[in-house]
Image (cartoon, rainbow over all chains, first blue to last red; front, side, top):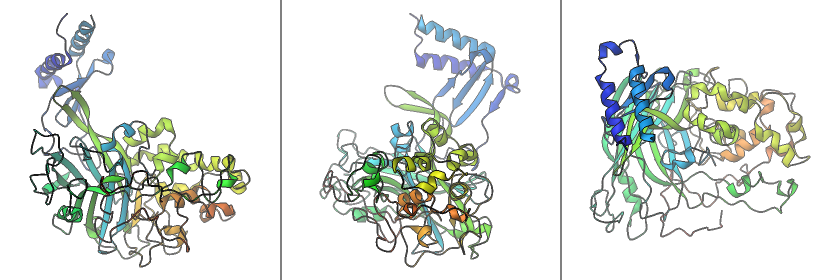
Length: 95
Length: 464
C-alpha cells in the first residue's frame, strides 16, 4: 500500500499548489476578504504560530476548486489538474 | 441558561462557548463603559489537576457597533498564550501560589490585547497576566490579591482583566428545563407540582471572564461623551464572540491550525440563541455575524415560548394565546433597540438594521438605587439598556415574552395578569430586589466576584 498518510498528502499537495506560477493564478485565485474590524478578526496572536502548516480542502472536485489555508489566510485556487491529482491521491489511499 | 451550552456544536467546545455578555456604564467610573464576556460554562471549582483556562487557539473578541449597521466598528481582541514552567510534574501548582510570578504556578497564561478600528490595529498590551484558578487555601492562599494583580491598566484610561470568576448569572435551570416550570404558577402547570422555592443551578460554579473598561468617548461614533439620552449617537451596540481558525490538523504532538479566523460563538442579549432560535438553526446563528440577524427575525416575531406558555399553563395566559400579531415589542428589544417615544426619557434605538446586540445608551448614568428587574421596574440603567452583572434577566425576558411589554407597541392589547408575575428564581420588584444569596458581586472592576475554590465549595449545596 502506498504511504498516502494525511501528512504526506498535505505535504505533496501543498507543494503542488505553491508551485503554480502566480501569474497563472492571477485570475483564478480569490483571497479571503481583507481583515478589518467589520470582517473576520486579524491574526494578532503571539500565542499562535503565524505560519503553521498549509492545509487544503476540496469541497467539490467537479468544480476544480481547492481552498488553501495558510497562516491566517485562505485562498481559493481554480486548478482542475491540481484537484484531479489530489482526488487521485485520495483514491489511492483507499485502495 | 443565558447562553451556557446553548447550541449543539458549541456545547462541545467549552473554551469558546460564550456564556454571558454584559455592558453597562461603570457605577464607580461613570465616564467609562465596562464590557464583560464570560466563557467556559459550569466550571466545577474542584476540576483539577488540569484546571480551567482560556484557549490558546481561540481568538476572543469584544465588538462594538456605533453606527447602527450591525457590524463592529471597534473591537478588542484577546489572544492567550500558556507556558509550562515545570514539564516534569502533573501538578498545576507545585506549592502555594503567593504571586503571579510564583515559580509554583506551573501553567501561567498571559495574553495580548489588541484594539482594532476599521483596518487599524493597535497593540494595547502584551504578556498581560491572568490569575490562576482558585484551588484552595493551601494553593491560592490570598486569591483576591492574585486577582487584583491581574488587573492591568493599559493606557488611555483602559482597564482590563481576564481570569476565573464566580458566575454572576442566576437561574433555576432544573425548573426551567423541566417543561418550563415557572413561578408562581407551578401548581397550574399541565403537570402540576407543589410550590417550592427556586434553586440557583449555577451556584458554586465558576466561569472565565474577559472584562474591559473603556472611556465612553472612545466608544461613541463622534468620540464624545454624550449627555442627550434621545440622541442616536448616545447608543452603542455590543456583542462578544469567539473565533477559531478554519483548518485543524491533529498529529501526535499537537493540534495545528491554519487559515482565517471564523466565528464559532457569539452573544449579546441573554437567551437569544437558547430560547428564540430553533435547534436546527442554533449552530448557524453562532457562526454568522449579527448584521445577518434579519434571517432570524421570524423566530423573534413569533417566539415558540409564547405559544407554549398558554399550553403548559391552561387558562393562565388567555390574552397571550389570542395574540397572533408579530411581536414588535420583542423585535425592538432584541434586534433594533427601543425607539424614542415608547418609554418616557428613554431610547436605545440603533436604526432599522436588525441585529442581536446589547444596546447601551451611554448618556444614561448609573442608577443610584439599581433595580434588578431593570427597565420593567423603572430603572433605565438596567437591562435591556445594556446589561448589568446583577440584572434579573430571566424574569425580565419571561415577562416580555409573555406579553407584559406588548402594550408599548399596541395599546389595544391587555396583558395577562400572569405576565407581570412570572419568574424562575427571583421575582424582583419592591419586595425582592436582590439576587439570590448564592451570588455575590464586587463593587468595582471587574464587578464579578472572586471564584469559589474547589476546597471550599460544598458540592450540590441545595441553598439558592
